[in-house]
Image (cartoon, rainbow, N blue to C red; front, side, top):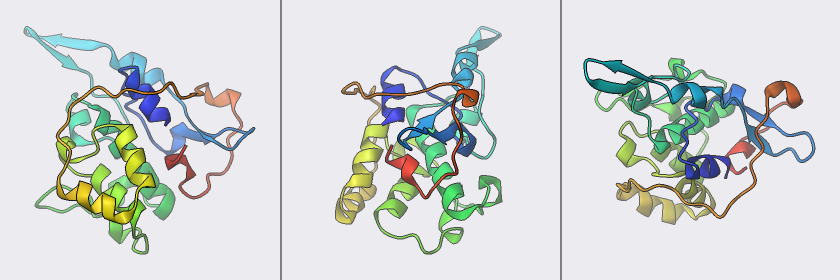
Length: 193
């Protein structure tokens, strides 16, 4: 829900990773922190009449389009899925093998016992091509809460929508890490936040 709200404000976080997701003391809800990258990412570099976005993020957690300076909303969802893989496996994204033909990460080797809906959501969020991923956070959240058969249908026809996400005004808490006591992370509860 947090990324749905962030994206509804036309913001791409660009640095979703385990270190930037903490649990709030009072209710153990996940909180996305470190929005400093967003401010820096608004800067541009002008070279010979062409304007480029600056590639900002954490290597290993950013998809190729973001590394090339062209992040989209699904870039954050890719990073969120890699965060889930790290929390489930303990393996850094850089150590996960990729398919030499497609470029997609073979993350299921790192988490072999994960099946069902969550595995299908991670598969789709980690597609190499952004148009094959979830177009927005709300779509990913809906897939997490749907049945396995619903997700199979969604995966067989990848989303090609490039729409701005809309939201019903969820609550978001974002504050400096020093202002929150970081708790040990448990399972994959941040995905449902």
